Length: 462
Ligand code: SF4
Image 1 (cartoon, helix red, strand yellow):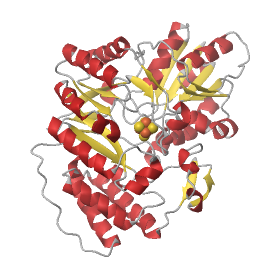
Image 2 (spheres, helix red, strand yellow; image 1 turned 30 degrees about the vertical axis):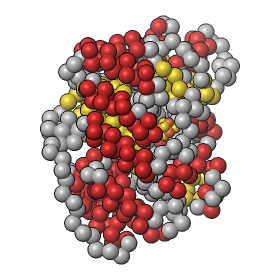
Image 3 (cartoon, helix red, strand yellow; image 1 turned 60 degrees about the vertical axis):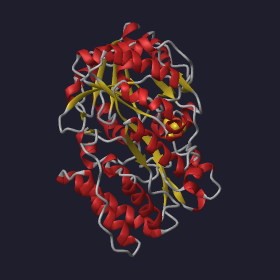
Image 4 (cartoon, protein in one colour; image 1 turned 90 degrees about the horizontal axis):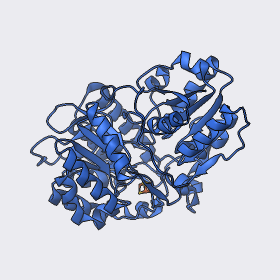
């Protein structure tokens, strides 16, 4: 039986979430076709023959793009079993079934469940349920990347010298042991995480490096959920590929706790670490249950500096408790810490996303900011308590989009946002402090985020 696995958007990476189930399904004898709509069109011939079509929903943007693609997929093949899987599938279960016609919705460690679904369909048996979140520890397999678009179709890395480096992507663990309130991992994994064996990760890296990758992104939700595993892995990785660099995502709390390990990351080829700071206001950080404070963030910046490691902080600066003064405080701290070049401009415009099942809904005061669930946007509508914050967010978003259109550098966009934030506070913007960076800051050509609305272009592309 033919199985079509479809990805809509994975932040510029070749989709690991197609490659991993593709291996499991192919081992079962399935005829698997993978399509990544971020870089290619629907494969009409394969879709027409498929008995199972499974669409991966990694994030909010991907889910919104999938909703635009489903009518086209159904026009080609109205009869195949339609499955949605991934982080954003279980939280949107009702919408995916009732509006998009999904017949199964899977989350968590989905490979085994997809195989079970395939077996049922291949044997003509009705799917007996089992839908929902699978948190079963299984033996991971090396992803099957044959049939996916080659790595040169995807986001590249500028290591800081203006060159473009081909990037591979893998995961050394899945899920997360933390319970941050705003995080989409939490409703699915609920504090659990699973280690992928070192040999599987290394073999996946080996194959992507053979295909041209000179930098690997370890896309684990948090690389230091298992620091022993992470360090042994990068030491083996560096021993085998001393010329290949990598990046990883590590939460502020772990950077702080494991400051003594950061030099080992740098020594093994880590070029930068993405860290989800979200806010520099301790009250907001407590609401988000982030497990760090403003002081911890500053300490983490100093620890990374001491280890020669570049940080790439991410933020959710616009939330129901935001004020222009609080936003300006964030910009001032970034300028003071010499991080202007380290922050992708889109991070300064992100608005909190509250999907179904978000732990944010547990907060006592949140309901006063909410205005119902937006079924089309798959999130709760909310307004900031201070309406000036919503107005500022719209201006910052426009400035970021204009900067993207013009190809403006990070500092130039920051300058514009700096002026907007001062104006919103009724102040005149002073000159920005001079940067002490001696070289460029490593950055991907497509920045990390998980909660932006898709652009008109992305929706039109499918
Ligand atoms: S925000 Fe990061 S550390 Fe917190 S639960 Fe999500 S993945 Fe884990």
